[in-house]
Image: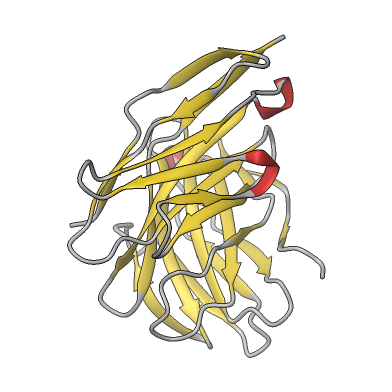
Length: 115
Length: 116
């Protein structure tokens, strides 16, 4: 079965420093991978996705993610963190269910950016 | 375009009661999914509807049910509420076409359900 792992519950980084939020996946076919962000008391917002093609995917708010097939990873990155990036980040994979597709989310990683 | 809307935003119920949550997707989106979010279990998939048909269902008891109307609006119902049903219930819509896996989802703000 498809699965997603986010090995870090929390990531702390100083403002201006680069950030990385890790994600590894397990799929049986072509991976469709996503990153979402959740700000307090709000729903999830789409950041970026990998379907095929370039391994480096660029998304919203200056975020990017690197797809690595050999390491089955899809780490989220940003060159220079902002305090406003502090939020809960979810990695997700699309999985084929019995009647269609469903999204499986990782447990989430809380990012704290300190001024 | 208006985003995904969910009503009500907050609900307080007691054990044994039932509750109905509503979701209006982005105009033109025909796929609606529901998720339960709790601190301990994270985001758990409940079900997905496409053109009024349930396409997929997660591992939840039969007390959890849903439906989708012809205008793509969706409702989910939880009967015989238990304390463990306290959670944030999120609805998401996408422009999913049958057989296409890679469309992103757009989430509503959620309904915070508290069961006392």
